[in-house]
Length: 240
Image (tube, rainbow, N blue to C red):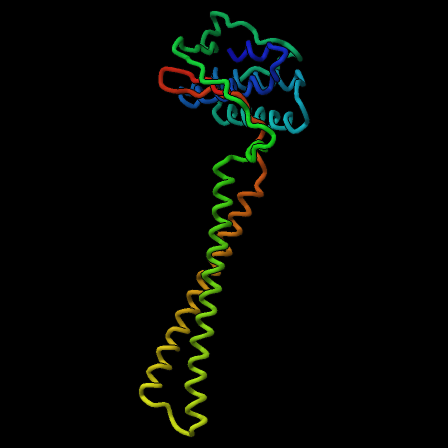
């Protein structure tokens, strides 16, 4: 099915083959059969040879995919054929190369196509919606923590002012603090120390939350959405 979609002149070939490539890699990971990995590698090389890319960024993504497949086959000790001639279609399987045939069970079902996000969609840039939500939530949490830290600093200043008032009154009257005043001053001092620690902790957590949120929102977007084939027990699910 993915080869038929790739042959359609109205379908962008790299997008149509991206899901097929992922399916072959998933089949190799599940069965450890080298034929699947070699088919994925040959698919990437054939696409690079055809040069049917929308821009350099898309071509660079497939160059990275081809290099990753080649490295994976080398680490696994799998010897794949060299790059096919430019624009050469995949060769039909023979009896001697029966293992290289990718069989799609009859139970495979289509799950798409679903409409792609519009340009006005905040996630159409490629950033996952979950990442955007998480980043915004962390920034909101950071703002709340900043408010808590500010409140702690205000209360700490009030506790310090209470101690200053008690000491000033006793000094003006030329006497030592009474037991009640001393107990009040000690309570204010404990409050001062506790609020100092609380403000420091809230400030540190606020900084971490804000920096993490900004990092999530500023992270580079994913590549353009592609068709996918997901492997499930006994079936392949097409998603667009």
